[in-house]
Length: 429
Image 1 (cartoon, rainbow, N blue to C red):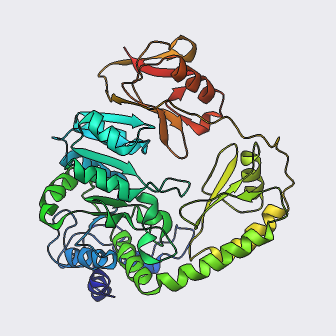
Image 2: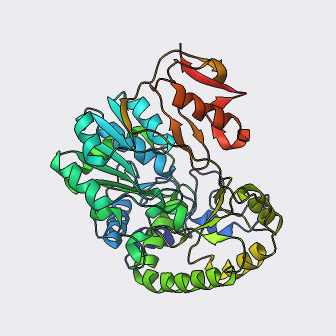
Image 3: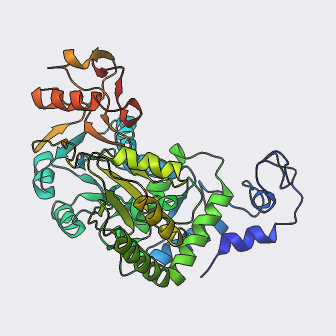
């Protein structure tokens, strides 16, 4: 596969640097690893390296090559994570009435707040009804979620098209879908805008993300992107995006076939334990069910030197890739060694009655104890982290149901909750 950025930076490998960054391609002696190879490619925008915010040569060629791996036009690279791309997508559509269909990552709500757009939140409503109720002109859907569950993107796409609404899919955890037939359909087959956080599931340096947009509207999205992305992008991150897309395009099918075989073997090896593997849309998102024992299992695995992606009171979630699937045997052995100590009863889930409401971000707010919050209006999102999706939303009035949710969140460890502080919630003043 084409790797134009790699070829250009390789040609500059022996050049002499009198520009930023300050290591100038030399070898530093204060890092806990050998950084010689890395430093040589950690460059900046200079002669021959193009400009990420206005790409015209080698970066644009690289974005085209990566888009081709997905079957789309040129993508937009971000080295500041998917957040900068979410902000760009929302900003570019700020003149439209925006619907957030279902819970989204908190970065989506921050982007809406920054944009000042008229925005609505739907909870538990089917997509067609939510679009009709909000009269949405742009729709934001998250798929897959942290647990590997995918929305019915065909239905979502059909509903958006029927209303002539721009469809934006935050597919941060689904960047790998395009490269194997055993994985769900790629969101790029359904949406106008798709955001992939490449570093979550592919061998990309942290912060590497891409956005797919209609080529005829690329200028609009690039203009927004320039407002939010750092003017000091990381060339190693861009290199890793380019390389990972090319690698997965050529070898993804074979790699994920091997991953699938090893996952089946893992399931077989824990068959006689108290732990079970939950069904997910993405087979590589391994969700181990451990009712009322998720935290304890997670910590026991940490003590064994194994770090999962996240845990809930009832589950531990692992991201399995072609670069760690050979360690599934270690994981199965560690899981078998942890005696189950849970009650067997899952924690009561946070459920919501179906509704839709307008989001509101006040200029003034104050904190009040949860016990005094009835009837007040939520000022900032409140929920569990991970996964970072709100349970209560800005602009939502706290009724009896919402108060019970707040009380339940208050009982969780502080490190697992955002939007609450010492038993208090931020409300409109």
